Each structure stands twice: as structure tokens, then as C-alpha cells.
Image (cartoon, rainbow, N blue to C red; front, side):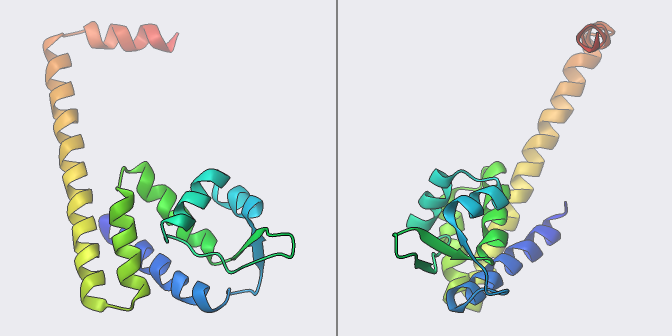
Length: 152
């Protein structure tokens, strides 16, 4: 996925939280367990992200269960993808805080920083791939033999 697509996803996630703070899109409220199931995140992770203000609960049931608007799904899916790419939580907090405060210049700066982070990651992976190719091209057919042995 291109970095411009990721920025669009980040903007959509930021916008969805603005809606989330006032109400959910479909009016559906989700329990923590339902949110976990829909996002693939553990309940512990969602609680952590709630405590770090990356996502906000909407209310609680009479029994004390947290309820989240359905818009939390998109935000948490973005957070999961960002965390899988090793984006630090502190950067996500900064990004969402800027978006939630409707500060366009700070949001733009956070998005630019995220773009640089993604490009840096790409550069490091490209370097790894280049070095891997060099190492195994010197080894001749040893790499191919190794791969074929693993395939069987």
C-alpha cells in the first residue's frame, strides 16, 4: 500500500473519531468484547489504547461494561496496522490528539512525520533486501538448495 493511501486512511481514522466523540455512525454501540472481535485486537490492547486516549469509550452499561461507538472499529484497525508497522504509540497519540483538536497545521505535521517514518522503514527494508541478494548471490547455488530443502 502506498504511503499516500496510508495518509488517507489516517485522515479517515482521525475524522471517524471526531464523529465518534459525538455519536456513532449507525448508532450502534459495541461492547469491548465485540470491538475486540471486529478489530482482531485483544481486550487488553483496546483498554490500553483507551487509557492512552487513542480511542474513546462512549458510555457504560448499568453493569459497568464499556460501550464504544461503531466508528471505533476503523480507528482501531488503523492503530493495529500502524503498530504492526512498529509506529510508536507516542506518535499515534500525537497524531490523533492533533486530529481530535482540529488543528490542521499540527495534523499536517504529524502526517508528514508519519510519511517520513514510513519512507525510512522502506529504505531500511530495501537495504536489507539488497544485502540479502548480495550475500546469497556470492553463495551461488547454496541459497537455492537451502530454499528447495525447506520446501520439501
